[in-house]
Length: 208
Image (cartoon, rainbow, N blue to C red; front, side):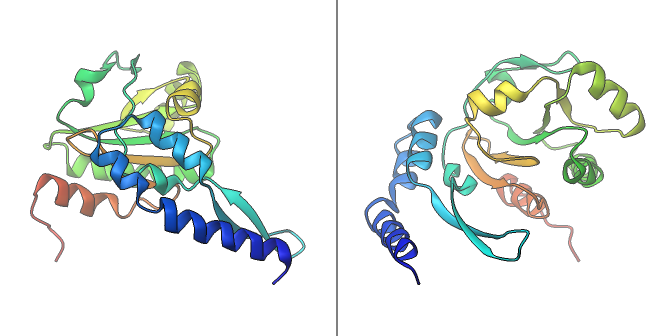
């Protein structure tokens, strides 16, 4: 272990010891999303990845799970179908928010599963919201061939960047409970969304 790695390890341990319980406390005190994301960015974690030459590379990363427990930042926009996306839209409803764009293979590969999830829970009081990076015209052309049965928002880059202050890539899925609190975040897998819906809404599982 080199000196840089030792220093980084010490910093991580220091953060865990002195700040490890700050996010739950922030959520309990109903502080704003801005305060939570500010804390997250000030306390990144170290992630490892494999470079093209096969070497293991360490880098600082703002953990997307850090925002769990934060209040949803309320924003106003309009979906392509004309629906207003505002405080009233989110009030007392569970919300699944998917950030995506049409040329993202990982994003589009998840659409059938997301459509299936929406169809399965269409009778529940749940918002299914997809915030796209593309223009309205591009999204409309895309969904003619590839149906995406969420409330679709176009030109959503500023929402992801400025409202959520996200440094994470695509796809990004955020799950919000009926009290407006973020309860989970996924950057790839979405398989855990269905159990969360069942748990949060007190539904009976249909899994055999």
